[in-house]
Image 1 (cartoon, one colour):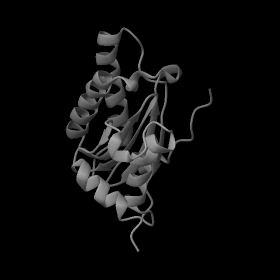
Image 2: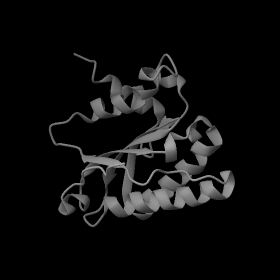
Image 3: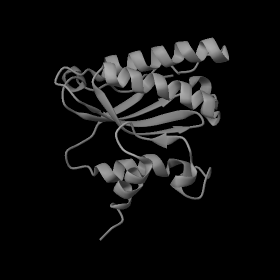
Image 4: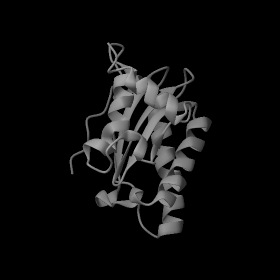
Length: 163
């Protein structure tokens, strides 16, 4: 497997927003299980607080997770955040499920200033609909935000469609 292209090192630290996709090891469908989602989400949110990131939106698909995160401090380091979130959630998952959780790497990109946050959030929460898992985003239980309620996320994402 080839490694994904990495950002310039300077782009990993500071006040930025990032869109992340992290896949499970061998695309195992671990997140079809609500207990596994809760276990991993708890670790991600704990690490986010410790590393000074806000998880603006997340969606756990059966074999991967999408997150939109925002650095909350000038020294916040995305690489450290992802490394610790994967390490700690992977360790806890291994203790419970006796299986490896994450693939070796992840895909990230900096959110550009001209991108619509509602559009990105809509993309994240509509992922289960596009995959045919549910008919509407609200029907899918494994998405949310550390910052906003599900209702606020839906309203925010809906603003993409407003004229």
